[in-house]
Image (cartoon, rainbow, N blue to C red; front, side, top):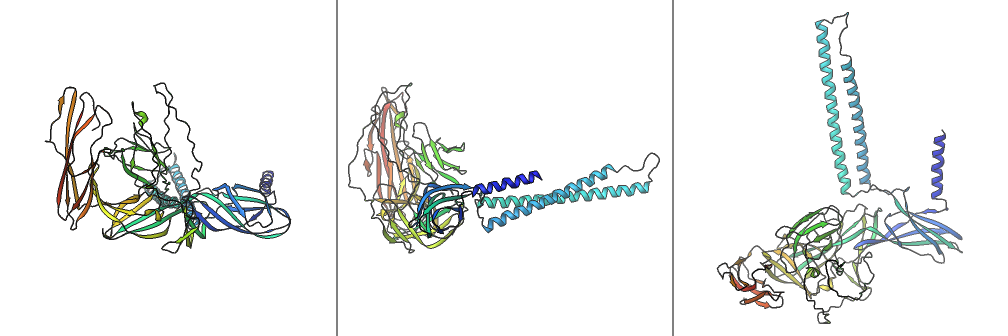
Length: 626
């Protein structure tokens, strides 16, 4: 009785402590949500009666993922705020959806059924124990006759068999129940059900000299929400414009359902580091093995954002010239989950919930990229600090001939093809969705169509057989800045069929955006080494290697095609390596970059071939990276 009384007093004390400041639990309702690339701003309204003096209100059953510094309250009239506090309430539970409640109730029923079968099995085993303990017949003074013995034997055999069958039947039911529980738990995992049930509370202390009926507007930012773009690129033929479908995949797992809210999508990310960098003097000195030297590389502006729905990532890792890099370590950051690229530079890795990939290779700068797409091709840069001797020439180009204006008039409103409002700010764009939306806090994707564009495009074929012996159809889009696109994955549909995926990266500094529409198997290319061109020779201490290649093209389509063919001749970075006797035929040759370019017009069923050659001279006792 004393223990019961003590427990009651403890509970009463806890309850009193939680509301000891005469705080009034106050309901509020979500009216509007602005979803950022990473995070969201919630706008709530609450009607309160504010008497004269100081009164404390607690807005409860909020998200446990509120960023406290972002809380704003307006609609105060002449009242003033004395304090604002945010805290986690472990006593108030989150509301669950009916679907989740039903599934969790099913698990409870199944667990009770398993417990019942366990009790039956225990009873059956006790019965077997009693039978086995009392199976001795007769005693020293009494002999059991044969008929009685047969009756007992028959009974024991029959009953033991029945009991064992009943035990097996119960075990079978248990296995079935456990299988159902596993399936329901997997479904709950698919729904991203979080066992944490705590909520957030915002406690506000207000003071006024005049009573008011107020409609407060409460704004705050939350994590565990965001959106990312997904594009559909459709082209019926190479003579028609590209149809670009721009969609947003919105998700939220803030702990609170969003019901019938006004939704706005923003291209902003309030979690980005907005502090400008400082550049300090650079002092040069010689490096020896005892030096404590760390090279510093600039933080790259990839503008890619983490996509929590990517489960597997694959791609190709190349060097700065486009050649595949075998043996590159690709690791999910913060884990031991990693793979190495194959001889062709390809890799595939399960993300297992990770957020970033780290790519490392000896002699190259380590890359850390957010997991943003199921296809992540990476070109790694050589680490010049690892070279024994380098000549660094620095220059800054002040050319403005290709500079594009990125300044927009504030609050310039346009409309999408769906009638939604587009609002361009100075650095961001907002899409105000006219249709109200409801989104449960389960982390599932809600697809919202933002806009559709019909874009004139110049189609051409592209081939670089040195890297990939396939011919790719590309579409070049001009004046693409007007669409204000974000980097993202695109599904490709060509001539009515699904052709695969590609990535759109509008952060390029070129005047046009080139999108790869996939491989066209009807245009065939082959790059062959001409083995009988010349042999390797030696002159003094030097070795001379002669190289020659032939590229063959054939158009098996019924229509002519325009094709850009790219290859290259190596460039020496060492005075001991000479590249001479360059023959490139009809190609346009960029001697600074070593790139060869042919612009080819291929008629239907036409075949052409191109040849080029060069010679290398270098010390015979050294090796070069051919």
